[in-house]
Amino acid sequence: WQVGFSYRRLTADQWYVGTQIHDEKAPFGGPLYLNINSLDLTVTYGVTSRLSLALTLPFSHGVQRRWYVDSVPHTVSATGLGDINVVGTMWLRDPVTGPSGNLAIGIGIKTPSGNNRVEDEFFTSTTTTRYYVDQSIQLGDGGWGILLQTQGFQRVSGQLYGYVTGSYLATPKKKTDVAFPTITGAPSSIILSVPDVYTARLGLAYVLAPERGASVSLGGRIDGIRVRDLIGGGDDGFRRPGYEVYLDPGVSYAVGSGTLTVSVPVKLTQDFKPDLVPTHPKGGDLAEYLIFVGYRYRF
Image (cartoon, rainbow, N blue to C red; front, side, top):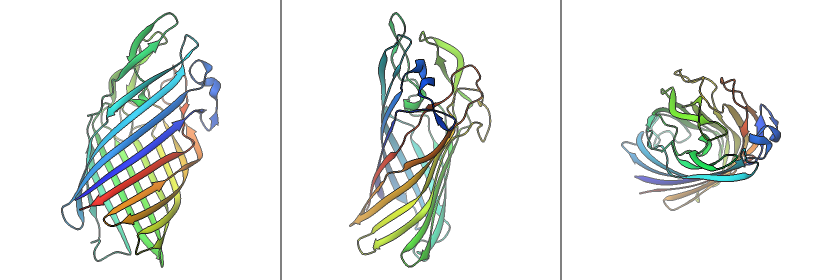
């Protein structure tokens, strides 16, 4: 058995269109701020030395502050349980006999357990009503998903290893039942999509002290949302497609049966692509850096 906790902090305060910053194109020409703190609790059971099953419970607290039609910035938030997922992972080689390198393949299911209809105040020119908070801080995406994952490592020389990880969320559902709001807080004709999401990491790790499990790593990371889904459908709904590329430094330290990891990816480049809906403003906030802190304990 293994229990893991993974914390992520994301802050963003610059509006991107394509590869450039255009804060004046944010809603009503004012800056938009995002602050999202998330915590994943993962319980893993090793069925064999090669096969494991993992259950992840994600929790998040997201805050968005932006300008509304009343020409005043306001803050809304969403807090709670997100989309629970279950993943099975199989190492291609036995980890006991192949410690110098290995590759694992994982497949799983993401449930729609997170609420994608969280409401908060919505500010019009004359009054205050209620509407669904922005898609960026909703607790769930509103649909089932197929999780495809991989992770691998290979000794390069001595205590130097190469590593790779990747995850792709394919979403068969086309659209949610949530509409993008008008400036009056009423539903528009634009319906929110359930988009595909992906992330990948590639780099090198050096073991500083094998007896203490201390290592440092440096690589690249990419996070993105596709314009068109792998399975198809719902591509003409509202989504914020694009990608960010990060320089991804990290450290890891083992104490007994527990391992602590910290990484702080710093943005190198980005491209906030237009979606397929022609009638709403393009662009969105992107983070300059991320903070990841993880701890796992094996029984």
